[in-house]
Image (cartoon, rainbow, N blue to C red; front, side, top):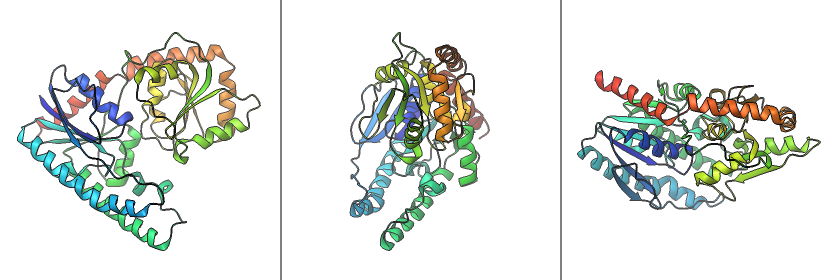
Length: 366
């Protein structure tokens, strides 16, 4: 088949899915990539042709509301026009289908509502600022700013809904996300899990010098404070490696592999994480995972076998960390189980086969 990929994603798990599924599908299909970013990405050899569209968004800091207003109006219109241009290019090339990924600007991208070619949208999560209470408008904003933000969110809700409803095939990255899509949009999605390349993520032969590895930001939703509060009440303080988005963001796979391999435990503490690629990357490196008992973690971490699922409470996290850190034999057994779990259940080859099966069934019934 002749397939087009489209994305305008930031670096992270969803963007990795674009590249890895491209690698898996290129063995039997012709894959072209259309993407929007502020600079060209290297190492895109898995695609037959690459069409880069440059777009430099205005930077916004918390108190700069003029910049925010620009982003929510003029910049949004510029993105819309760029999507219109890309749509014409895609439709003119007569692809069998377009595999559309999320947008860092609108969540469900404009291109979904414009394409004439069959579209497959891989939804990583609904628009969280609209559908989750944690992201409600802060009470400390002025009346004017609250009004502006309410209007902006209403517009974005309309855009997001119209775009996602335009997709011919809707995919979710987990059963948890599938439920959230149903709740938010009253749409039925097919589950297509992401995976891990065990030729990239595997245990390095190095000492596990860190007790705990945390990757994320200081944002409330990512569990940073949960870990900090847990450590405060631990009699014996663990050696923790923090990789914080505010200070550094690692995109080099070999560096990530080393981080996982030199840590005894990886903690996944994000609030209602839709899927979470890092927990299965850590498992591929033989590192047990302690995750909060919610979201996609329920599908990727096998409680008591590849790690532990816990309640979102610092006392429970502290107890679980202390119990595991001091038991090298348990860490070894959990790590071996984790590697087997990834090899058997979480490969990109398995993901790509599932993706193609879903699409072929749809095309046969058209």
